[in-house]
Image 1 (cartoon, helix red, strand yellow):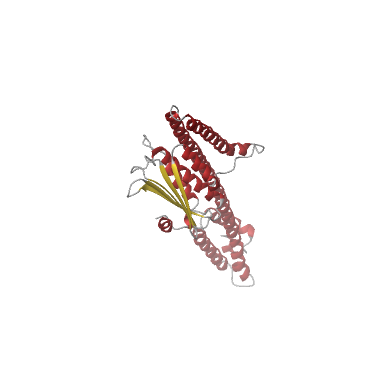
Image 2: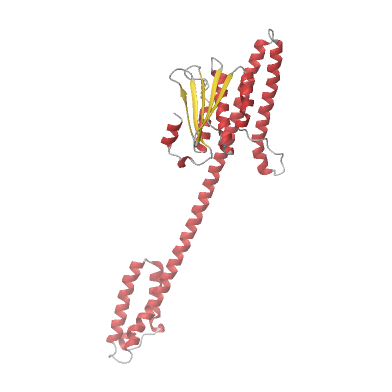
Length: 332
């Protein structure tokens, strides 16, 4: 090489080697660049020193050569790091886009499940009560006309309530697209428990409600969940309890509202309608309880009949905040 003939190393003289080192650093990994770059640097420095005696140009032949060759290696490594950074940014952006799509699908699925539960609770309860009222009225039409007229009046109220709840549920969808839509109906809560009991009693179900402990304020989500659980349990009792009686017990302890709905019906209690495919009542009640950090147990009682027992926190929170063992212990 020219440095071996005594020429001083300069950028023009080292240009081919510098270009090769740049592309080596830009296109390969750090280990490969270090190995080949070190060998190249050692060979050029040794050749430059061998081609001329030691003198005033010693620093130029050693330090100068090192600096000129390290420059393309540094620039090539920087280019490689920048390309890797841009690729990682693009990968993160693609991952974020996929994640957003998955989250959007999950939110849509959760909203559909929420609407399905609301429609099931509203339609199943009111239609079951209306069916029972209509059957009772038909049975008493000839012998007790006054009582029949009262039941028919209650039937009108039941169907009206069903229409209002359906309107409120569908209104949730309308308000998303139409901000000027009419205000929704008030969300059902335990304040409407007397109306629920009266509707069930008009359908022939005798309901007893007891409250233990000092009533505590509930968050809106917990209040709605408590009402829906009692509504579904009484609906099942209305359809399937042979003795046409049900007992509702509300117990307020230090941190939870404990709800128990029992009837002295048959072993299965009718919680799952005796039809192909079953029903969604129990599943919906469990989903509601779990969604606010509570728990629900439902099944036949040892002494006969059926029981639904739920433990709901006063303020809604995620299920992970409450150990499952503790929730199960509270509703025993």
